[in-house]
Image 1 (cartoon, rainbow, N blue to C red):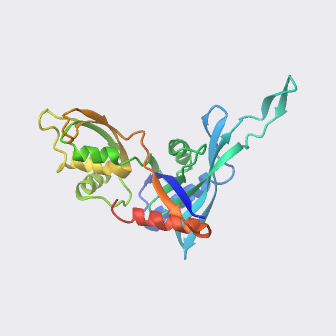
Image 2 (cartoon, helix red, strand yellow):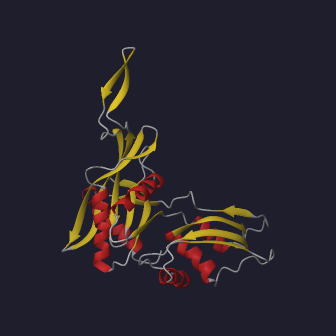
Image 3 (cartoon, rainbow, N blue to C red):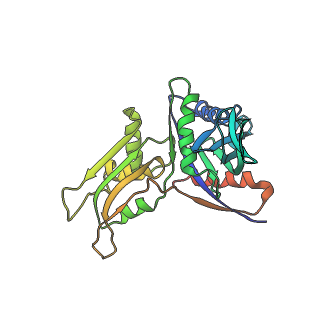
Length: 289
């Protein structure tokens, strides 16, 4: 039976001197460790937690292609005891803090070469924002060799498209980090290389126009146009004031900080689910997107 899959994308980026296979293997090690016992539970609300678990590494020869596994979200009681109301009486019972109760299970795939984690979106399951927060907390604990790490939930592109198509861009605020071998257009590539050359792990820009009639000239600017394009997969648009090219003349504010990018995929062959998903993301992230 055909299956419709909707999924989030999280960009996991090592800031490291490692290159090539050494860097790819470092990513694989991180995903294997965070999804292995003892499991690392992350509370997303009172008595509710998420976890990644049981990732399997799929290889071609000695090269890691992808890892696939699961994420879960459910009821969670920390500590070794819990209080239970039973037959009108309160009782203290033993509790297993390694249990997630009534979990909603979602599927995950990690594309090793492009260091992206893809998470199935399911009602009641972990959200992209929750997995992002979980990884930001737990992955730094697993780093070695003075490496640093950036975790970014990739954002919806509609805000960026609105900015580039606007009649006037009055102001913009964005945050970016440098990419790891992403395909970028010329201006974004120039800014990306400058960030790496200057050891700038994160850049925040706030730009305001000094001309209300013309606005910011973003198209040919490395710091503006290049930065906005770099933010497509490596940052976020925190706030932009624009006058759309719709004839109304009214200003509007656009942002994508709370707008995750979502992809959709129809899979007709359940027996080849993981390979079909992998082939799809390889196509997405090995060309300019």
